[in-house]
Image (cartoon, rainbow, N blue to C red; front, side):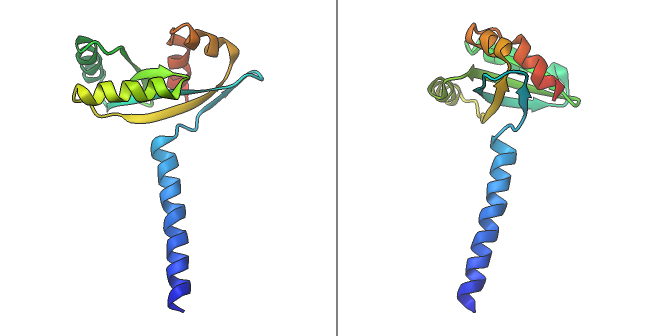
Length: 135
């Protein structure tokens, strides 16, 4: 009986932690308008309830030679950097941030819109930010 209780508890905890991981580290927003899709990785460097504080964090990152931007979603301001469709580039940026004393959360979003994918490939992120702000 003890073994089955331990097994049930282990499975329950696995499910709970899996769900928590997905909520914290995986952005489940999906933008769907075409057959092409790409996973876009990015690093979240801050979430603020005040736009001025988000701007200050972006300015602080830029003064440390880190390209950063923010978007608003549901009255919160999200500061992000390291946008890439290449996981290694995201990992490299995470290391840069750590070396400069910044913490970050790894995030990703699936994009199914060829125009947005193309703009990201050209390192233009305005369309991506618009989509993220609308979700």
